[in-house]
Image (cartoon, rainbow, N blue to C red; front, side):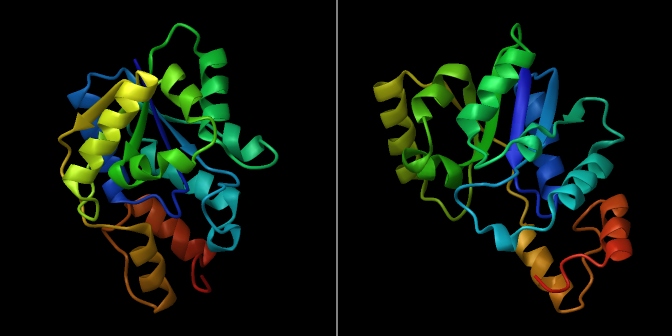
Length: 200
């Protein structure tokens, strides 16, 4: 059973890692593959740090966890990075693995605007982590709708919400404030070395 954890990881932070480890144990996943997004259709590219930097930071963040891995398939793809295309490719690479796509409740609410959501539900089970900014009733209604309309396999995680966000980290860095402990030490050192996010 393979977890797929996609995101801009701009930058990856301790909240991402705690969530992934919690979900790995909660759902007894064999591994989790982190997939930094290339050109996401729902985000302004100008807000993203360079793909290679984001990839390097994820790699540094997960290198000491034997259950975590990284893929650059979205970074190599031209055009928009659609989740449906990513899952198709992952199914080609891992034909015998059951795929579990990890996302937040805020993402599930946006699913109706995503490309080929029927394909997403066909290729993977969805593991949803609740978000404090998403009403539980609204989330439950959306999940029930997807189950009825698409036969979606959606599982809700009990992972705790860690109040760290990439946007807050970027904001602090721009202001010259410390993000120590908000990101793994290796990521903190990489950000300092490459002077990242000072102008974002």
